[in-house]
Length: 459
Image (cartoon, rainbow, N blue to C red; front, side, top):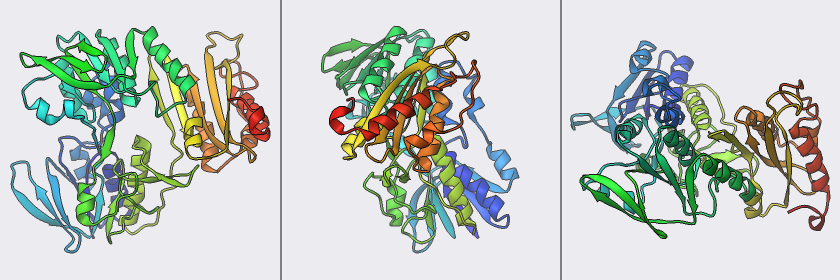
């Protein structure tokens, strides 16, 4: 059996190692168009910020190690075509020559690409001006490092995960930072409005100039370097621009193979990571998954999801049996001294889906208030009115305290209720929590709120 994998980062390499373990006799070959495989892309902002010493620290497996384990790795080989009837690929080598490769099982783990608005398109970059960047892979990070030399003023466009992490990274490198967001608040697709305000406050407290409701119209440049961003509210001077406005799934090869896309625009698969095309699988950031809370198909490109999908695909391609369980939409990040976590649905998302949801907000301390260094922690718990079913949670606090979100994520996977959370036997000692942990307090309040008629519950 010849198993061919297109893409050598999270999903691709997880699939390769699992396939080889499942069927040691199978030939497993990975084609990667870039220079690196199997690295932690989520760590890129922390290398730029100086918290991680060098991009090499992010690499989990080298090509040499994978070849030693019997997995063929071909770097700088770009797959440019798929013939699913003949079960062959067209591959362009680093020198430009092309050839065909056969497969018995094919995995498309092609990931996503950063969205580049017209004003930051490669066509603009072709003018020779530098200093405009996206951050998706190690070469992107290396290019940013080069641009940081002599830079003093940075503008970040986009207030999502990457933009918020980069704000801290660039401030730690001594740059003045302006963060532009076209929506009404930062973290707008992550948190409800009240918690968005707290994130903004943390940014501004640490010297980030946050400007929401602003759109970018064009860039200015001089002597081969970006000099400013023209916005709907005027011109802002800078010598570095970070574009972090979202990503798009890379689906061209899937479409060429005849695979269906879902409504999200990502590749549609079943719970074995199979597409509708025989012997063709997809996994990772280019692929849809099922949101277990809503039972709807979603596209949420995050690291654990990609690795888990790849593992499932690898086992199945090699003749085993595995299923991807779906996701609940868990995410976590830090910006300066604030940890931010969410799982399931926000109140805004629940309302948009037409669910009868209610949220409660609880403020407490992350451990016993009388114990040294107790810090504030904020929890918003969202439940379904009437049934008390847990729908989601948001937590803000000291970075070490917001991993409590995983308790909620675990209950969401089993469609738990706020009553179940209220009865969980959580650990307690003063250095770690109050005797009644903030999650238990929130669960008690949410249980009461979910039983009340809409007109008697808080907004």
